[in-house]
Image: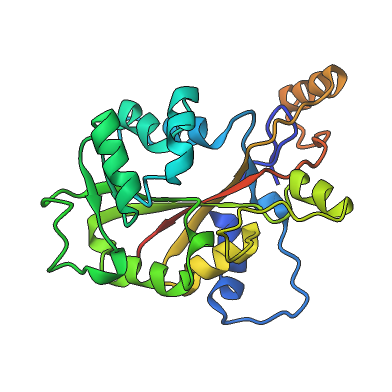
Length: 266
């Protein structure tokens, strides 16, 4: 395993090759230990900043783009509304959502372009009319999967029926084992959006995405800044200079969100 100067693990796609039989279900281990070192801990950043950077100058199909109607105005005012941020960063972005009121609010109050009211499960390559013949670098499902009654069916449809529209997919979900969630559990509380149906971890969202037909490339955890003391940073820099792989590890603080990148295999 290689580490950066801050002691954070550097994830490489080849790491997934060794565990892919578990992700595909070819191999079963009822007590499988998924190494968190497979996860590239991105710091410091929030989800909007990270995705904006990742999708800069890219073409994006943003599925579930609107957000809850009653939080849109506050998020836009604070610069935290993801779709509005992507309009400024990406080459172009098409937004689709089945929340009619939220879409109409974004169109009417903020004049957001290229928005479509659409239930993905009800369209296929013959009936979809939102792409207008365009291909996308990325499809984006940001904090959507945990809201779905049947996320496996949804992702399978995206791969099998609409996978020709985009090169890769980005899926973000709240991390079930984030430091924030674990602190709440210790106090006897589950902090959760009341519309959520599921919790996911880095492994379980990778397993679900693989079962839907995608090939997982990378998994990140984001949303909690991690700091290392100055002496440890100096030590790691010295080890890098002398060619040693020895590193002092950053304290484990697992991110608020899991971000997965995969390719469709349709």
